[in-house]
Each structure stands twice: as C-alpha cells, then as structure tokens.
Image (cartoon, rainbow, N blue to C red; front, side):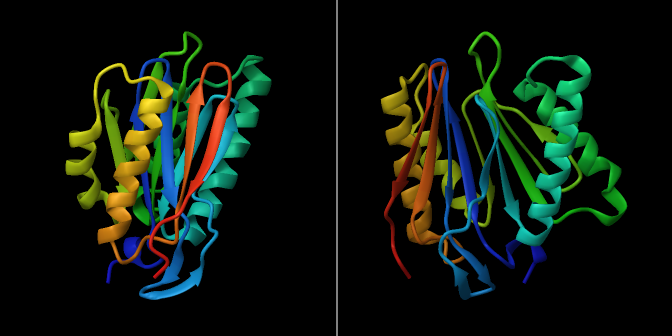
Length: 204
C-alpha cells in the first residue's frame, strides 16, 4: 500500500459565483483500521482562505505548521492579508524545496481574493500546481470524485447550490472509497461569511 493512502482521506473543492466550497471526510486510519472519526483535514488560513491537506497525516501536521509560519511572516512583511494565489505559490515552493525528501501530502487551497473572485487549486507532493476554474480533488477518493463533480458542477452557482453539489459529490465518494468516511465537513466561503456544515455518511 502506498504511504499516500496509509491514513486515508479525501478533500474536494468547487468554485461558484463569488463563493467556494471545500469539503473533507472525518476518518483517519491505519490502512483499513479506523483510528479516529473526527480528523480535521481542512484548516483556516485567513477569513476567506482555507487549505486542505490529504495524505499522510503526520506530514500534514508538519506542513500546516510551516504554512502558518510563512503566512504570518508574509502578512507582517507586506502588511496585508495573503491572497489564495499567493498562498498556493508559497505552499508549492515549500513542497518543491523538499522534493528529494518530500512530504507525503497533497495540499488543496480554496478561497476568495480581494475582488471576491473564487480560486481553487491542488498540487502533488513536489508542488506542481493545478488550478482549474471548476473543481479539484485530492486524496484516496480522488478517482471517485472527478466524474461525480463533473456531473454536479455548473457555471456561476450560488452558495446554496454550490453547497449541495459539493455535499452530494463527497457523499458519493464516501460510499465508494473504503479509506475515507465517517461523515464530512463542508465549508462554504462567501464574501460575507463562512458556513460550516457537518453531514452524516456511512459509519463503517
């Protein structure tokens, strides 16, 4: 079994009309043994920017600490909030610096910039960025998500529609991926607020 799928976990993000959704499952395991059912994989960076870290969760914690350190340093130097595009480049540089002994994690960034334009991207273990305009997915359930997301995603979806599409997509994935599960958390980021919703899924 690959070290990338050792602890399991799936994260997906979708872009809408001045809003983005990012969702992850809650399971952390040791291969097929469930260790915990309340593992956060999506983390707040600023009020409008969130990062998800799929893969080996020990490395994910290390990467998160380094991300927050660099983000705080950036905001002190520049005296402004970090944009999602800048954060993704920062994480990409961090991953590439460690390419010869890479962190076993796949980062995903979702957020709104200063003009409330949605931005989503994901990257591999050495920082190669993919930033499509519609949706991204990382983790053990990625292959189950892409087709479902393509079916649910539409242009210029409002926050309620985007939440529904994201929630249905991750629920569909959790039905099929044995390494993910035990419910999901969906963050809906708009220009005014962030809604956090916990949804139930298969508990096995």
